[in-house]
Image (tube, rainbow, N blue to C red; front, side, top):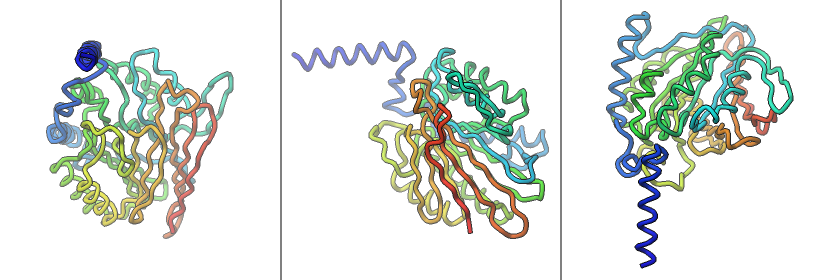
Length: 332
């Protein structure tokens, strides 16, 4: 009897949460819709039109030219899980910081130059109809001509939210590059791992792109997405972890084509692993409810002359203004 009562109560809770757009029952058991291959097709269609109309190479969203001759900086954030206008304090602070300064808890910080680009690694929202909220709060970045790039997480795709994501950000599989004043180039590739797999078609696309771009003289190749590579999620539902076989294929691919960094979110805590000369970074979450622990990352890429490799400095920060861990990577 007690088991029946528990199951009945659980069923009521599940139905209630689903009705309130807080829990996607279908997504838990059947995976996010549309699935990865369909989202990849949508992205390729949009990329074709966009790249053709803007005279860009296939699947390229932008060629960014860094202004400073010494370095450029990218701001990274993930796992905001926005649920309405009342949950954008961390986002607003982050947007202000990426434009040079901000005030938090009565303290004003000058963080220097405007970011060259801003990247969000998924789980931007946590319930339906919140992409417009997120988009309104990052509008200052667009107004100040700061390029914004996104990749979806599993929470971004629940309740069929791909349609909303697509309406605002159009594509989840693409690349862009950044060129320094002395002509050095770095490559950034977004792949969609929102349901913890790339799928066969997106994997082929990534392999072909890396094979091509590894011959074009890029200093650094960075892949960014949502799902972490090694840290095992205790949740085994759809969107939790890559299959072991896919991890093997991806790590082999990254090592073969000189990918230096794989940057992601999903786990809500930072982690750094180096495997076969590739550095895998998980950024901590930037949820409002993590006040005091909410995190973001900056990547500063220094310029060099001649054949020397460019130093890359990655630093994780707490939203309180505290730098809580630094990774100083100087490639030899």
